[in-house]
Image (tube, rainbow, N blue to C red; front, side, top):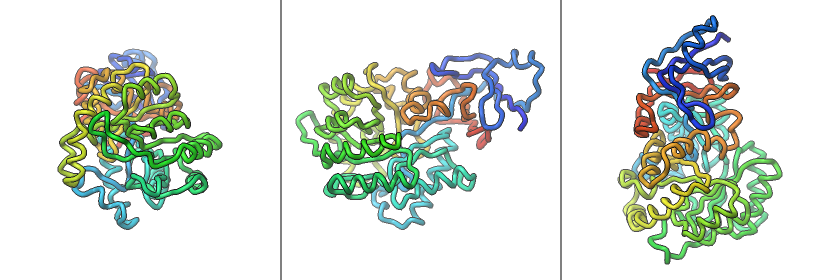
Length: 392
C-alpha cells in the first residue's frame, strides 16, 4: 500500500499531546509510520499521496469510554427499550455507531447489552460490514437479582456470577461488567446508598477476569459498594456521582485502577427531555451534591480518570465541557478521551496517540482544543485505521 501524508497546521502528538507545528503524519498499512513536519517530509524526497487539511488541528481519534449499543440517550423514553427485540436493538445500535464515528470517536467501550449484540457488532465492524468505531465489549452485564442495571441480567450467588463471567469470556469479550449500586445519585452526604452485590461476588468476577488477563468494570455511584470495588481490585469504577471525601482518599491510596466519569447523566439538564419525570426528579435532586463529589475527582491530580457519555452517542464533547466546568485541567480532560483512555482500556500499544507504530486513528478540528474544548463539537475529518470516513 502506498504512503499517505496528512498535512495540518498543528498536531497533538505523543503521550503528552505536545503541539507540533507544520505537521505531517505519514501513514501506511493502517499504521502511523512517522510523525514529522511538512518541511522535513518534503526535504526527504519521499513520495506520498498528500491530504492537505490546511489550517486544521489534528489529534488522535477519540475514545468513548462508556457506551451501550442498545440504548440511545438522545431518544425520549430510551430506558424503556431494553426489552425490545434483538432486531430493534440492532437498529438502535447501527444509528449510534455511525453517529459516534462521524463525531470523531474511533474506539467505543460498550458496557452492557442484551443477546451479545455488542460482540456481534464488534466482529461486523472488523469485517467492514458495519460502519462505526472499533468496539471494546463486555457481553452480558451482571447485576444483583434485586438490584439496578437496566441492561444487566439478574444474578444471585458467586457461582451464577462465575458462570456468566466464563460465558462472556468464551464469547470473546474485552471486559467483565457488574452493576453494584443504584443509578440515581445521592441527594446529600447522609443519603444511604444500597449495595446489591456482595464482596465475594465482586471478587469472583475479578478473579475470573484476571485468569484470562482481561479488564473489569463496575457501575458504582458510591457507598459501601465503592469500598468493595476498591478492595476487590476492580480495574475501572464507573460514575462515582456520590463519592465522599473519605472515599476519594481511599481511591488515592488503595485503588490501583481507574475512575470513569459520566457526569452528563446528572449534570446536563439537556438530557432531561429524554427521561421520565421520576428520573428527572432524581437527577435534579442530586445535581448539586453530585457536582461537588465529581469535582473532587476531576481536580485530584492523584486519581486516574477517563470520560464517557453512557450512550449519549456522538456527544462526547459535552462531557469534556462539563469536566472543565467542574475544575478539571484541560490537558487531562483531553487525555481522558485519548491517551489515558487508551491506557484504561488496555490498548495503549495500539491507540490513543499520534505516534509511529500505532493505528492511524486521526481526527481534525478547527482550533486548538486546549484553548476551546468545544471545537470537538465539529469534527471535520475522521480517519480510522488509515481509512477516511469523513473529510469536509
